[in-house]
Length: 201
Image (cartoon, rainbow, N blue to C red; front, side, top):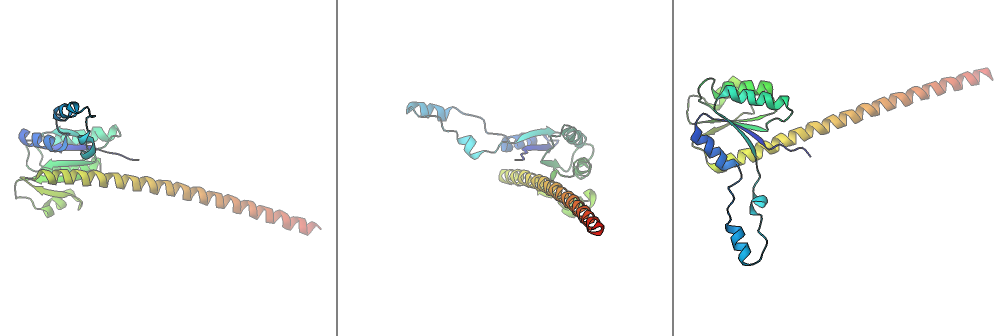
């Protein structure tokens, strides 16, 4: 089964980067449950494992660095499933960052996050040349980030599984066509030999 829990964050504000980590990384472990369980000689319940889907975050503060991280991930055959990209940053802005990232990795899911109104979703589509870019306004709700992370990684996985299945079906189809051609050729040759034998009688 294909898995991918890698998410890229491109955000120049350290406070916002911290918020992403608080939202998308596993909560810090506390010993409250283990102390409570020990009082009653019970095993420690693994609550986090039951409710939390962990993500592997890579955080950068500039678009150029984000592009480099995507290039490195593609080279290492460990691509990101999704990227949250701030719109207004020093250097190249979020739309241009997204455009360059998508040239390197067309499969990555992009969410543009902005607190400014100078770009509309249509502007971003025009700049990136893609209609599957998502757009989120700051200040965002933590649940929105979690939902985007969950849906985008799931969609990335589903698309890769579909590609894998299509490739397998194509391979099977090619093999079947080759087998049919081979059997047909043998049948034609057998019929030709039979005709020759009949003519010699």
